[in-house]
Length: 232
Image 1 (cartoon, rainbow, N blue to C red):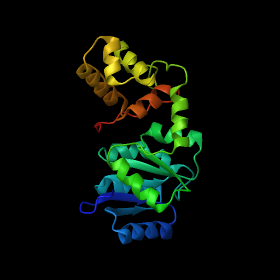
Image 2 (cartoon, one colour):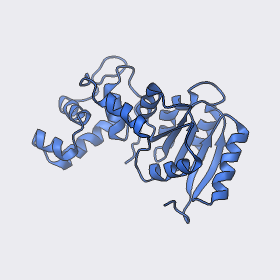
Image 3 (cartoon, one colour):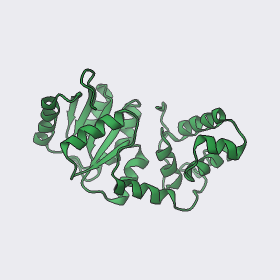
C-alpha cells in the first residue's frame, strides 16, 4: 500500500507543461503519499532541479522538449547529482534497446505509455522500496541480455582494465546469475568478502546495483563515468 503520512518527494519531468502540471495535480488529488517537489520540461531544467531540490524519486519522460531520448541520456548524471534518488523513465514504447539502455544508465524502473496512473503510483512506491519496476516483456529483454556471451574485461576509454582479475571473476559469476552465497562457494570465500568485492566494483564503475553491473559488463561501448558516491 502507498504511504499516507510520509510523502515520497518526486521531481517530475515531462515535455508538455500542461501534462506535467496535470500529473502533479493528480498526485495531490489522490493523496497517495507522493509529493511533487519540482517540475521540469527539458533536460537542462531537470538537471538544474536535481542540483537544487532534494528528491527521493526522479520521474522523467525519455523524450523531453530538447529532443528524443534526452531524458534517458541524463539518467546517469541525475544519479550523480542525486545519489540517493531513484530514477524512473517513462518510455514511449517498450523498445528493447531503450529498455536495456535505461537500466544500463542507472534507471531503477521503466514505464511505457500504456500504463495507468494507478500503475505509475505503484511503480514509485515499489522503486522507493529499492526494487526494480519493469513489465514481464521488459524483464525478458534484460534476461536476454544476461544470456548473451560472457563479457570481456571492462576497460576505460583508453583501454585500461578497470578491475582486478578477481573482481572480473566476480563480475562474470554475477552475470551468470549467481547469488553472493553461490559466488562465495564457487570462489571459496566468505559472503562478506564477496560483498566487499561488489562494493569496490560498484565504486570503480559508478553503479549501484547488480542489474547495472551486468548491463555494464555486457556493454561493448564507452564506459560509464565513475560516480563519487554509491547508493545501497
